[in-house]
Length: 334
Ligand SMILES: Nc1nc2c(c(=O)[nH]1)N[C@H]1C(S)=C(S)[C@@H](COP(=O)(O)O)O[C@H]1N2
Ligand SMILES: [Mo]
Image (cartoon, rainbow, N blue to C red; front, side):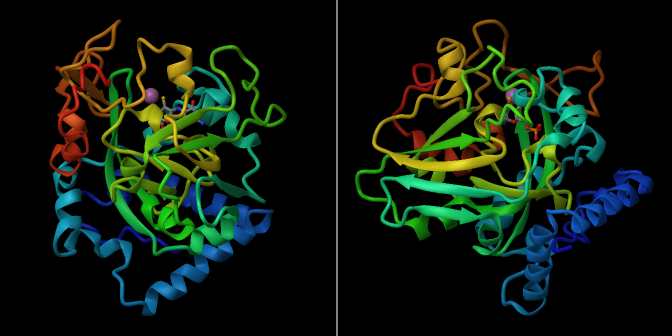
């Protein structure tokens, strides 16, 4: 397996210290199983990347926290926080294609077929095309990024994701000058996703970012978490993680990335425009019309009766991203 989480920081416990060993063993078995089935090609690519990582002049993910300059600062804010237990990150999910209950995705997403998989890149780019997952995996060195994920419903987690900045992909496909936004389409396959077709949302689940947000180094194209490939319920085989925005912007199981001139219509905005704006930056000062956004509950740590923790502006990434919104009224562009 490519990514090892060995000694990635002194301040954060290793996932192996906070996840029961049986679970690690179980997942390893699961990976072996995957290797024997269709997804073997994917894991092969990961193994190849591992071999590369041994010699390459870039740091292995485990060393990320010791990187000089911006990156360690970017991650620094989260390093002192406890990483959410794997069982919570993989067992308490929002993935409406598999049901609306938090336990539904873990229960139902085994039907998702993640191999073969490809992502179509189209719209306003010089180099459109279909990228096979194997090629996406090799596009750029993988890194481990410990990010907070703050759901609009008021809960949060701290997850060690594995991937690389979406900017790496965007640079390679060369957006035209007219491209101002990026639209993300996720898989909508009624055969394997039992709730596609339900009327909760307009399928496929579509999300969008302004091009400069999509190019921001924090915006992650994620293929794994906790040093393993993504579980289906977390958006396998490839998803977005935009840590300063509410969780619903982090679209799972991506199949298409389209560059546009106009602001994309997004699934949640179409469902309830007054509740879910296009920007959806985490902001304790702007309440959801039906509840406050000033506090949150950390899954696995804060019990139902614990004092809620304060939500941070831009989910704690203000120093990195506030400049993207200079001069904008964030109450208006919520
Ligand atoms: N395709 C798709 N992506 C999705 C969702 C979804 O329902 N469908 N839910 C979103 C929401 S509301 C959240 S909070 C995050 C949850 O990610 P996690 O389950 O990995 O924590 O995924 C987001 N991505
Ligand atoms: Mo969410």
